Length: 157
Image 1 (cartoon, rainbow, N blue to C red):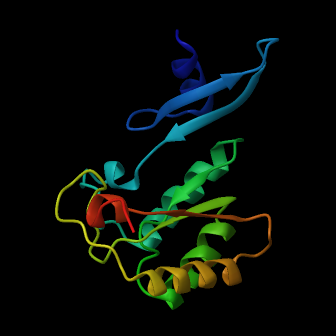
Image 2 (image 1 turned 180 degrees about the horizontal axis):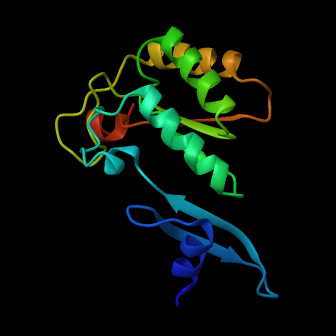
Image 3 (image 1 turned 120 degrees about the vertical axis):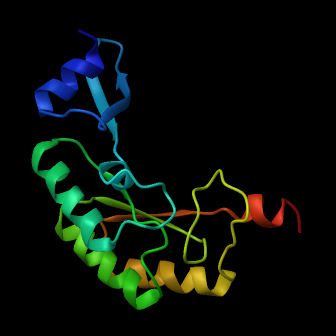
């Protein structure tokens, strides 16, 4: 059995869960392990914003209960405006997420590799990030900002 299969088995995971990568130190000790599980796969939906905040939170709770590794949770656009972002961050942190990723697409969002994406104005995204930082239960909760601006607007001044 490969390491990924052993890890998945130890956690009691079955597809669509998958271990994406693991890292080892020079002595061969595992330093960390990364899981990839998109809640949309749980429901067989594409990554275009069809999964609700509560469905992601429920999936996160199930993962956090079983996994003894830090999780990064993709909260898409934060499920709305800055107030929704605050609610999302509080809920996801309470369900066990030490890191939460927000992206700058408009709602409804499109998977990052699809055409016809749009991004919110910079000021709106800054407001969402400030709201996320204010809502986290402690400074230990990381907020990760992700942008599609280069794909949408190009790279330049």
